[in-house]
Image 1 (cartoon, rainbow, N blue to C red):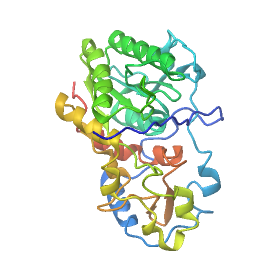
Image 2 (cartoon, rainbow, N blue to C red):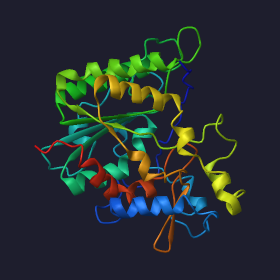
Image 3 (cartoon, helix red, strand yellow):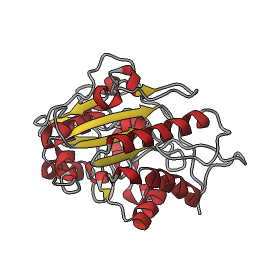
Length: 323
């Protein structure tokens, strides 16, 4: 089995951006987006990054702020999930009787604008909580910095799921902990961590949906970043963009695929919101506009997240319970 690389990345912000920005009618349909994504993956030159949406100078700071603040833990010491989370940490259709519970690390947070659109469009309440640098998996060790606090937070999140009994749970994360031998977990060990979380929320009887990961610019793939693709390599951008063949080998992707197979869990093909038939986009052209995808090497920006919300709603509707 391969070794899982440690990823501890932060997207949390205290900026003034409103929580869950985006509206159901502000972006393309799923059919339109898939057409835009595939066509853009075949383009050889990058966009004008000063007029793109957002511009390149704005994209690096275009992360979704979480309001209210208590819905996200940023401490490396144990910090309780607020008792009011089920009423405070809510977006989408806040009056809906059906609930999607979205939780994890900054990878979960980057989906907040899109899920806000999903909830509004499909009439689902979205409850969202996150912990910085803490994937929603149960690590077997607590010796690395912050991992004890992380495990406690995950167990508290699981308890909240079992109390709330949402119809759907969406765990999203990349952050992992070192093992006791100061090595990163092997794929089968990561699979065990994910399964521990899944088995922990079985009392809720919720349907678990896994999302395919956004393509990430890991250093073992490339020395490029989304920013350098759009600037240094703009005239030959295809040589800089990641391929589907590459991202299918990411160890966390391999591990989640194994979990989905063993536990018979559906995996939502969210990769198609970023990748064409061969390559994955750093920008998507649509009707005379160029939409930048990334905020940094591992996160989409909040503007793109909100823009694809309508497409995500149509994609998720095939997996959500009808009653």
